[in-house]
Every structure is written in structure tokens, then in C-alpha cells.
Amino acid sequence: MPCVILPRLFAAESIMSCLLIVDASSSLCSVALSRGSEYWSLCEDQPRRHAQRLLPMVDELLIRAGVKKAELEGIAYGRGPGSFTGIRIAASVLQGIAFALELPVCGISSLQSVALKTLRSSQADHVMAVMDAHMGEVFWGHFQREGELCRLIGAEHVGSPEQCLQALKAFDGIVAGDGLTLPAFASCAQDWADVQPQADIMLALAEDAWQRGEFGSVEQHPPVYLRDSVAWKKLDEQPSLLRRD
Image (cartoon, rainbow, N blue to C red; front, side):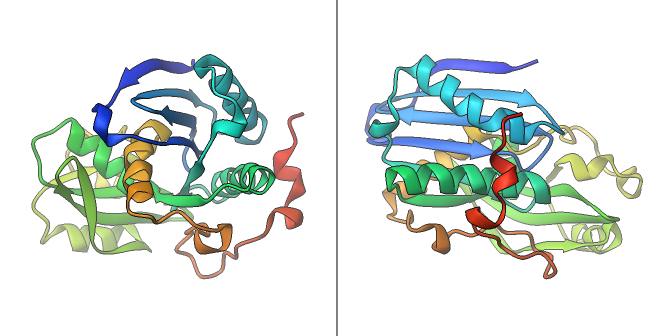
């Protein structure tokens, strides 16, 4: 079932742009939009229909918000790590819209989205975001609260659950993300195991990046897979991802 949030307010002085965010880095398919002091978002649990749903959700959101594509000033996406196929789909949508409208783009960390969503619902100052990377591995990253947002401590990683658990031995904070549902993490608290990346959370990170002047060209914001064997492909090399059938 879709989750619809229409509209909600940020502090008036914090948002002075019109930004679109798309994410398909997990089983969720989500889009979010800001204009002035308002924002709108749509989220659906579509683990196998990202390619069919992401573009229609963008169109639906723009209609609900009464925003024309020509009003958009920038577009961001969940750049990973996460679902290889989902990230490619989001990247394709990003490229198509950005090239057509000549918009600057930005990539938002999926792990950072998990961490920020957790921090917003807790009193913790540190979150280890852990996502299921499949193939017997997990993605993880340590994030620290910084004002209303959070920042990465060190680097984002991919590796075996055992490697992640080793990193957790010296960690004092909350562990969140669907990686916790793997058998290796059975001894860990499961309170935050259902947290996944979402475009509405990424919106705050995208707005911060916009204010910092971090939006740029598609080449400056490639997907982040963390696995060395995965390569970035341009839009014309993956046209099937944009099919709506």
C-alpha cells in the first residue's frame, strides 16, 4: 500500500528551492518534492516493480503538488549502496529528467538516509546503519548526529556480517537497517531493523547539499555500489530500465 504525505512544512527559512528526489535503493520505491516551505512525498513497497512505478510516481507527485517540471531547480537520488538494479533504475530516471530539463543533480547516501531516519526517532547521537547487500554480505556505515542532520564517520563498507559485527564491538550507539534481519545479527537488538532508505528523509540531506553548492553534473554524482565489480553505465547503455510496461 502506498504511503502518502501531503503537504508538510519545514522552517520557512530553510528551503528556498524546488527539488525532486527519487529513490529505489531498497524494496521501497519513493519520491519526494520540495517547493518553498512545503514538501510532498510518495512511498510504495515495490521490491520488483521499481522500473514500472518510479516515473509514474514522479508524475503523480508533481500533479498532486501542482508543480510543473519546468519549475524544478535540481534533482537528487538515492545513489546507494543498496539494490544494484534499483540504484540503476533511479540513476536512469535521474539522468533522463536532468538531461531533458538541464538540471544539476546530487547523489544521497542510502546508509545516511537510514541513519537520519533513526536519529529523528531516537535520542542517540550515533547510528550504525546496516543494510542487506545480499550475496552473503552487508553494507554498513557509522553516522554521528550533527544538528538536524548527520555525518559519516570514516567510510562506508561492504563485507561479510562477521566483519560488520567485528566493527560493532567497539561501537556505542544504535544499530539500524534491514541487515539486522540476517541470522548473523540475531543477538543484536531488532528495534530498528525495519528502517529503510526513503526519499522524504533524503530530502533534508538534498536540501543541505543544495545550500552547500554540492549539486553538479551526472558524472560528478555516480552511483555508489561499493563492490568493485559493478560499473556505472550511462543512460543510453541501459534503456530497458525506463520501460513502463
